[in-house]
Image 1: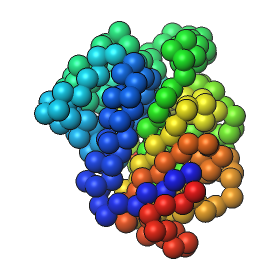
Image 2: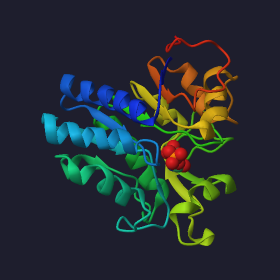
Image 3: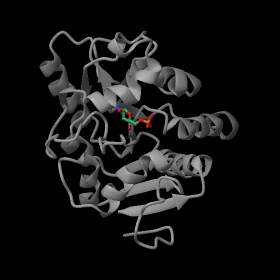
Amino acid sequence: MLVIIKKNYDEMSVEGAKMVADLIRRKPNCVIGFATGGTPLGLYKELIRMHKEEGLDFSKITTFNLDEYVGLPPEHSQSYHFFMWENLFKHINVDPRYVHIPQGMAVDIDEFCDWYEERIKYYGGIDLQILGIGANGHIAFNEPGSSLGSRTRIKTLKQETRWDNKRFFESDDDVPQYAITMGVGTIMDSKALLLLASGKGKATAIKATVEGPITALHPATIVQMHRKAFIICDEGAASTLSTEYSGYLS
Ligand code: GLP
């Protein structure tokens, strides 16, 4: 595990975008796992800039998103489909045929989840999975208590996660109760992980992730076991790490 501490959100975002761009240049037909939430927005902005100004070519990449709310159609302004198209995909030359986002309206959710897992395998696995982190240590929608070996499935959202996300919805009741999410095991199968965290609100979660014991009660701690995990955080998110990090930890 490599912990990279950057001064602020913008520097964190640029560093993360560089890693993604390096991969695309090295392997134009790579498979990238994308995340939603506020944290990766700066990274996506930088990728868009690289596409427009430097010709970074996304035409051969395949994408898999981590999660989606159950019950929200793709055109719903709070769906993760909408988020990804608005904030990244429509601004780059990604091929829509290679974009995969869990279907929150799937009729048979279990069958869909199995299909999603198969699709990831079919494309040879995810080369780089981008991750944010919930204040309670969740990754994707793998809430505390999620099995560390779990696969793509439906999960009930914790009340605190629904509160964290309610700022995006008109009323508390509108925040969905369920989501389809890649499992912790699915995420760990990715060839590389890139976890981003910004601000003091994530400091406790990052401390547990980097220094804490590995536990299903804090699913992000499992990244300690990954052979190629990068955590890029800003000084706020790194502010309670107890070890003296000179930027790196292996
Ligand atoms: C949601 C998403 C996660 C994301 C988390 C944190 O729960 N399912 O993938 O990491 O929010 O979001 P933010 O980056 O806005 O703090």
